Length: 447
Image 1: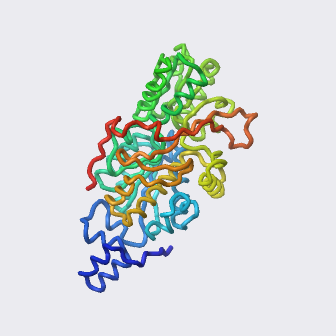
Image 2: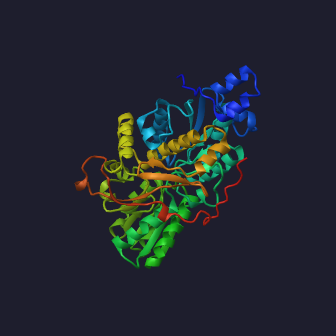
Image 3: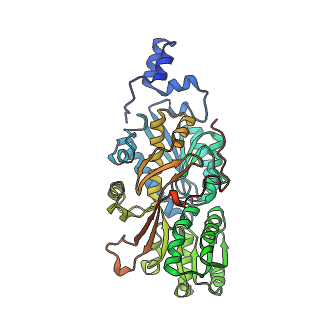
């Protein structure tokens, strides 16, 4: 597809052109990025990655394994965003008027790899996208272990990275990097938003059992929940830590059943959350302990059944009924359902917004030169998200984004087959975020 290139000369191009030949001036007019190329040394895949009429994004999501269902929804969000960027869709322009057709007039292309939710696999696949395709942006996580690994990889390679999905505090905490950015909510914001709701709904001085996946996402979410529930007298009676992709949760659930807990906080995600919740029901635990999902799992209600999730409280990034309140959400839900035949989950929403915020930053920078794009991100310009205004916090590269509290609907209360959750509260993001340096964030160098 032919792209519309900017014909006008930037101030930098004019200055450069005064000492160039006529041929060089014509090249700078056709490709404004060449003006930057003459003034800055190459870095990462720049300027080669944006020298032509298209740019490439490397996408690695889990298409197999315990997070595969969520990874496919995330991928659909990315692909819809690319379609909308290339066509100049009104939804992209509603998010940011800076976004035109293409990104800086260039067609966006992409490649997809299966990360298997494994850090080494994700790094290997993204390394291939960088070396073979000169990717100007890499993305995809779902597993926070992958997000942390790709953060470090992006910083080393000096190629921009947007995480997509990652719930660990560490992603924009102790493992933050200058070249990495996160759009979605995370353990700290989930806990700060949902803890008061839990105390109000369930009461004070409760005994809690945690079922926690044994990696950075699980540990940081569990700790944040514990920290925010402690002031209300909630005490941890057991924290059962299980490996990612555990085939059987019986040993852990037996300890939870015998713990005397009033509440079960299932921190698991993906198929691990489905399997452990199904087994908890089979063991009779859910009849005695109130189930909570502190970090909501896309498709969980569909997979375990709305009879199981009825009354369950969860923190999430987005739910499709927010379209009744936010025009941008309505445009997104309509477009997504038309293309894919179902209502989007928050994994798709976060993926779509990750590409939109990148495109907005590039357009404001006026170049693909990575340090300039980073500084455009860090300027904190506001864009219209699916749940109102959001902006990037420059000190830790975390998007300031609301947290949505939902409660599972009983089957009799569902108005449509996709109507699994009721939105209870929309909690502003700024008030639930920690200080930028609280989790040890030190971003590192631009070059």
